Image 1 (cartoon, rainbow, N blue to C red):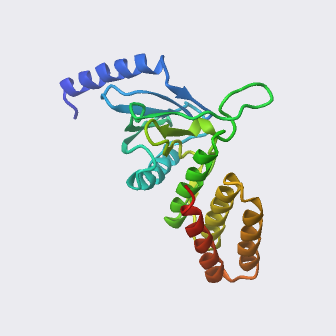
Image 2 (cartoon, rainbow, N blue to C red):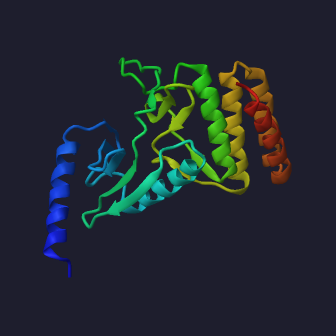
Image 3 (cartoon, helix red, strand yellow):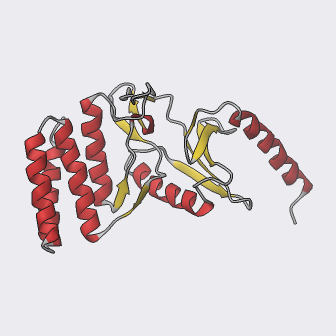
Length: 227
């Protein structure tokens, strides 16, 4: 049985977090992001009755943690799950050293829904996606709103692992190849991207997964040398 003091502390904390939720940092289809009551942290919380579930939020945090250990996403500090079907992820607030990237708008003038306009961000993002693929993680939805860049170096930081998953075998090869090809395209090497992607996919279709991975890694090694 919980002590009355602990219940009171939880009540006070929830009151603070409720006030912070009224002034969100960002919001999307799956949840809302707001300042934590712990300095230096932010919280991503799922919408009640929304697409994200406690199970999917826990999976999201686990996948983000893989990227965080690689230094390409905010560190995860914990996951809280609630009986009503919502959950929240507490993570590092990177805004002190990182800033939003400028992205392409859509036909209605909505900013940030497309890719970053800076080719260097797209090249570096592709390099990071390739690194994640080698760790068995596929990360999607890399629009500008889900990426920040270091204020000093321009190095991208990958946010939002809501659309991500584990990959292995042929899926891992395809994920690595697609990330690498997108990096070549961002670097203006469209012909190289087409030949590379076609070569890897032909090997996969023929069932030569090991050879396809070897070619995929060779291409990714070349991409990593592009600055």
